[in-house]
Length: 220
Image 1: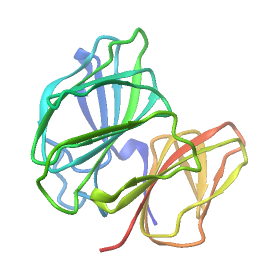
Image 2 (image 1 turned 135 degrees about the vertical axis):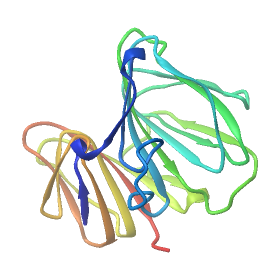
Image 3 (image 1 turned 90 degrees about the vertical axis):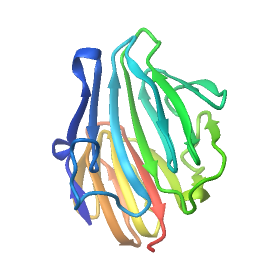
Image 4 (image 1 turned 45 degrees about the vertical axis):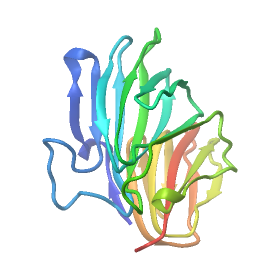
């Protein structure tokens, strides 16, 4: 298990424009040839947008983009005609495929915080696709067959335990609270990259509720 701490993330964004970004993987000017991806996961970005701030229209291609809102509301518009507001508990997926452009903004009155994860598709090209699942339950994994991956959301009460999926590759990102995973304490913003995950449990700390995102992937 390779643990990466929140304070090791690359800082980005544009604070003067109300945008703060933390990148878990090599990103933009922060090029690190030893940290390009883990399995299908290419990026895990924590974004904070002040009210009225956002990312203007920009392109993506050959990437599966999955967004999880932590606080606030995210307004999404894309060149394929989709427009939606993503709220905490929703899973949003944009398959950029052969190419799509989108806008992401905080049009709400309070600060917005979200986690956005980029995954590599098994096959390039195709037509863009969009999906939003409102209020996903902990017991309902979100399948992303285009990337050979599955997202599990775990929201835990203090001291609560949960089984972690067995997987050839497992990427765990702590959204809030404190989680004990295989003897390692992970706090908000920390992540673990696990190879050959088997019979693992995640346990929330006693200090408060915890939330963790788990990507289950096959080793290839």
